[in-house]
Length: 171
Image (cartoon, rainbow, N blue to C red; front, side, top):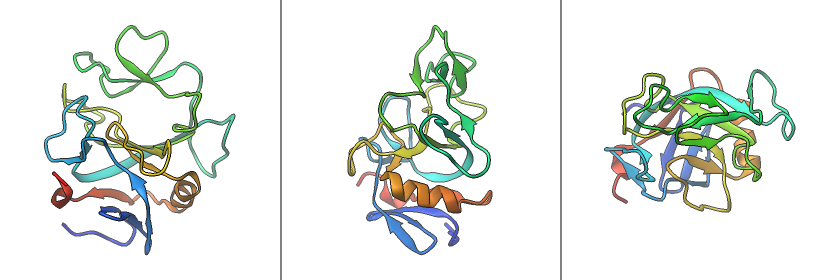
């Protein structure tokens, strides 16, 4: 797999980006080449970064960010047509709240994993976000220390990709 200096590359030590390596947390299920909804795994592959969401009441960002409001949710209802999509409350199917009491989703980078045309059961909401505590496993996302994540976000360009090598699967 050809990587570029502007790619965010998962390594055993963390995410390598622009010559620096940042510690990160990955899914409790490790890296997987056969991602499924609810397995807690981080999917291997080359993932495009599709956009930034932010809590405007908590953080300010340069450039465009989708503002996370009180009714914003992300559908993880595998059999529904809006599976792995942004939805709004009230929403009668399984979902994850984007506006949380904790700071995990104060800043969120959305990847193109199983998006925008989601295949049922293949997994939803593979985000990059702030971690709960150092290296605390996620549900499949990649999470960072807040200041490291801000450093990364401040330097992102449209061509940046997230690379999760298959070689890390099963580790």
